[in-house]
Amino acid sequence: MDATIPSNSPLQDQAKRENSPAGLRRPIKGLFYILIVSSLILLVSIIQGPKSVSDGDADDHVLIKLYSSLKAMLPEHLEQRVEDVEVLDEKAKAYPWSNEMLSWQRTSYHFQPQKNWMNDPNGPLFHLGWYHFFYQYGPNSAVWGNITWGHAVSKDLINWFHLPIAMVPDHWFDSEGVWTGSATILPDGQIIMLYTGGAADGAQLQNLAYPLNLSDPLLLEWVKYPGNPVIVPPPGMKDFRDPSTAWLGPDKKWRITIGSLVNNNTGIALVYKTTDFKTFELLDGLLHEIPGTGMWECIDFYPVSLTTKDGLDISAYGPGVKHVLKVSMAVGMEDYYAIGTYDPINDKWTPDDPKADVGIGHRVDDGKFYASKTFYDQKKKRRITWAWIPESDSESSDLLKGWASLQAIPRTVVFDTKTRTNLLQWPVEEVESLRSESYDFGNLKLEPGSVLPLNIGSATQLDIVATFEIDNEALQSTVEASVDYKCSTSGGAGSRGVFGPFGILVLADELFSELTPIYFYISKEPNGNAKTHFCADQSRSSKASDVAKPIYGSDVPVLHDENFLMRILVDHSIVESFAQGGRRVITSRVYPTKAINREAKLFVFNNATGVSVTASVKAWQMSCAEMNPFPPKGNDL
Ligand code: DQQ
Image (spheres, rainbow, N blue to C red):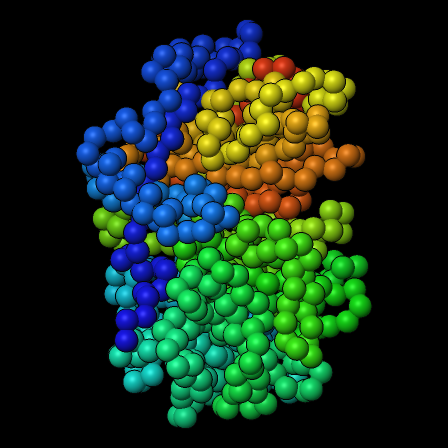
């Protein structure tokens, strides 16, 4: 069998598309020397002009070829998605990374194993006082392979104990890898783990595992059901993986969904019913399908409340409940979700807005973020999502570092009762326990074209909350021509309009030789309505050429009575940016060479040409989370 390799495989094409827009251009009058020097540098970049993809040498042609062939494979409505795909040129000349630079990239409060490769989150659950986190782990190298289930436990989702590997590829039904799976907690407390096994002949098989001893709070030992596999692929189906958490239907039978691909390019969600998790019945219809979206990986299907902020357990159903379908699209490695209605009699899900269906509408995160999986936290009555954050550097750098990939800070997920069209994602409150020294910068008046340093010392581990106000009258009365603004193609933070960009510069050195702007940009629609975009511009984030430097983002609803709000978590090489309380999120991987350690600074800026902005910024230094092997020294829990 020649099933496709899961999308985390390094064998999949990744190439780099570089944007080098001019930088921030006009410092505020009277600002001190930093700003004068910076403006000189920026002037040079203006003179040089933006570098286009075709400026380069032969390698660039390879890039363009890769990109066009990927695009040619897709139907029209998905072409836009490919526009946004980050492209890393593996052939770019390797940057001479120093040990200091590489060791700086390792995070301080994001979950990662002690070394080697990690990808998808698997089977998160809460049991006897502990949060359990399993993950796709490559134990031998910083490159995907020989996939096992890593395991860690935490009391608060932030500080972790690493436990022994939970499952290894040691049976015929998973000899090529213990791939992604999900946990279901049954009403009597039993824990069911369903996962995909890669078999030696290439088949993708669904298997059952369970804890040997449910009374062990650490769930150290896992048993693979001897009758595995419990589900084999339907005839002719090659790609068939990542069983979801099970939900209970009105007929008292459990259902799971599994992603696949038919007719070459139609992504589908199959549904199976079971009562004992050992025998399963494939239903005739599909939960959902969309032609042209390619393989659906890691499907997540869960209820959200339309009325409360509480999360809902997996089988909740009834008035005031909608269902979210989340799909990880193997093409482009992007997670999409849509909100809709689930019909439990026919096991069909219909999106509220077909124009915002999965793969077309909302990304879960506009940046680097894949294979996300939620679980219901019965301790705090909330739904939490995890996600794999891959690297954006080269494989050779990963081998030098000895590790690859992070997990996003777990985020609560709720329905946005204001817009009623999207979810809100927000870092779990426990991350705030790491906040230490805080800095308040209130009422900063930013004239058009200004940059202000925020003196907080080293700016590599931060939690930042910023509010921006602009003159509403000017916004209503001024005509602007930037109707087609799009973060990824509109020139980044260096490209100025009447109403933007304005925001925060993270991981910037004093001379702005490296900087990562996180910003809002307001454009006007032909009907005069304002449209706000939330973007993260990595185009000048690093002097190294062997890292991807995309500009991410999308438009975000800003309601009539709202200011422009952002929260940013900076943790060395990861920047997670949340707009408007989590209506949009962008995760960036950033690899500066200069703006590291004490050279990494924080700034606030307004690069709009026609509007002043009033900003208030609060920033906290973040302490390191504890990530230790278990048991802790002295057994002190
Ligand atoms: N990763 C797993 C697969 C899944 C893919 C293998 C998604 O089960 O489809 O490591 O990243």
